[in-house]
Length: 88
Image (spheres, rainbow, N blue to C red):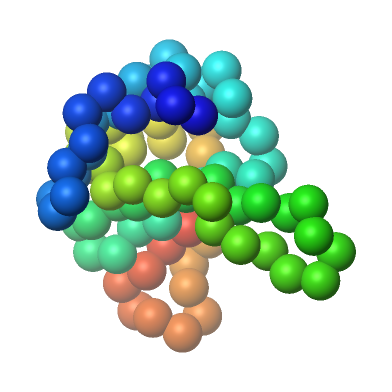
């Protein structure tokens, strides 16, 4: 996963390598959307008892939309928050 982030920002959007993300994408990855903010997340499901996030960076709307289109991701509307979606 170290090759995914091209430019890390402490706050704000990070720049990622779209090609590297597409190489490693599986069912443990998702894009979380809150209004127009997008977060790329990877979940570690190796434990039987819980799932934890082991990779999480904010990305631009442009990069998020590119991944959503290229990977043909489908949105899941949050049942709790009106403006929240998860793309898988």
